[in-house]
Amino acid sequence: MAETRKQLPELAKDAVTALLAAINTLAEDPALLTSLRRRSLVEQGMELIDGAHCPLCDSPWESERHLRDHLAIKLEKSNEAQRLQRDLFANSSLLDQAASGWLSQLTAIRRLAAALKDEAFGAAIDQWTRELAALQGNLRSLDGLRGISGRLASGWHAVPQSFDEATTSFAKMVAELPDQTATVDAQTFLSTAQMRLADFRESVRADKAADIAVAAATCAYTTYCDVMDAELEALYDDVQQDFSTFYRLINEDDEGEFTAKLSPSAGKLDFDVNFYERGLYPPGAFHSEGHQDGMGVCLYLALMKRLFGNQFTFALLDDVVMSVDAGHRYQFCKLLKTHFKDTQFVITTHDRTWAEQMKSAGLVTGKTSLRFHSWTIDTGPLVESNVEVWDEIKTALDKNKVGVAAAALRRHLEYVSRHMADQLGAAVVFRGDGGYELNDLLPPVLARFKTICAKAADAAQSWGNDKGRPKRPRSRLSSPPRMRHPQSSNGPSTRPCTTTSGRISASVTSRRSPMPSESCLNASDVRAARAGCL
Image (cartoon, rainbow, N blue to C red; front, side, top):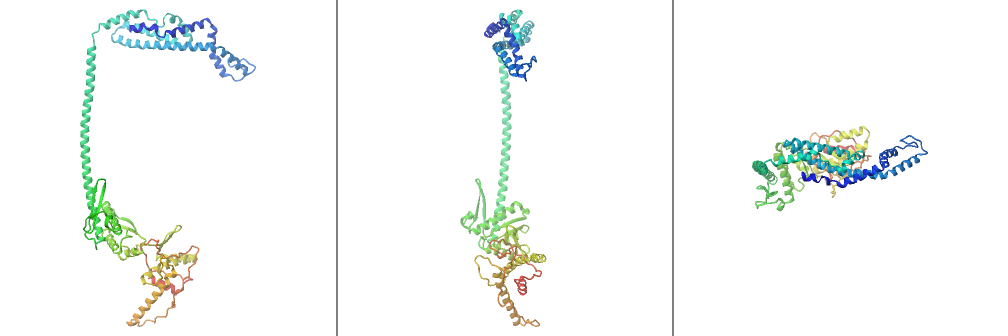
């Protein structure tokens, strides 16, 4: 402290010298001080000018420009005073910083004096602190700087008279205190040791907690893996067993000993099937496309059965047996009927043969199947209905929409003719594109129907079963009539009801209501066509 106090006169020495020179300049030229005091007022006046009247004295001027020029001249004359003012406050700021640094040291020493209960030294410090604080206040204003010029000249620090004596007494008191170096070092060592011991204990607790967490996580993971493996193995066993059962049922004629194996490996599930007792291979290795399609359906059904159980109540199968041969398709129907009695299947197909096979196998009936003969963007799919078509025709005729009724009748006759041609074995001229129209189908159907009826009548006569019956009249259809296309503003269909692009699940048959006559067909033709539908 003593060394620092000796250096106080040298602190901010240049700043003090510059301050004294500037203060002396102001004292020798009072006009500079007046200019400084007026400068701020003139600057405010310049900002408040609004017209030819002075905002400071309210005196009138020739014009606002003359007033502004007058105030600008005054500001120009005070520029030197302004530069002097900036120098004053710049140097006073340096002195203020030096005083603040010394005050911070006095504050620290004051706490030590209070700890040692040296009231005299504390009072001396308090007195010097108050004087330095007053000095700092004067450094912040022009009038204050002019008032402390004498103190600046004699020494700005101005040590109180009692301070040196109090300092000597305090230094003696401190020197008489016992040496605390060893004690402090011991305290520091013990404090550091205590902190490290606490950190060690916390680390040990954290390590034990981590070991417990690792053990619990390992146990949970092991249990999870064991349970998962057990469940997956059970799933694989059930799926491969059901899959093998389903596939054997479909292919019981040649693969009655068929088996399959699901085996998990690194990141994947291997699926191998038995190929005629010659080992397990991937499905695509030796089996044909038809067999692979059958495997796909069987695997799907096995998975659904295992995953949903009794909740597997609905499924959509879209052309899933296209490459499966006819014999195996019958077995597929048997599979669905025997193993999935409580599941509602919606089966769609383009294959008319497969649609008829489902009917003959009893998987679907006429009431549970629909046939879409065509579709358009405007109307969507057109469904052939043997019941609703007559209501549709009657409704159209009641509204005098003959064209609409004719188009509906033609579409229905195309559908019925195609079905009767298949059932009766009519001799229809073959067309590679399958695009049979009504005039291609109905005449051969009626001719075939006439021939069969004639043979039935001849057979009845040969057995004597025609007693009491009128003789069979000669039919007016001695030659197949030519069918004219009914014209309609709605564009009647000219394609057969079962085109190669149409969807088929089955056809619906039922008893018809009377059919209205059409200009293009005579009554006997209509009755014959209707009789063939019954």
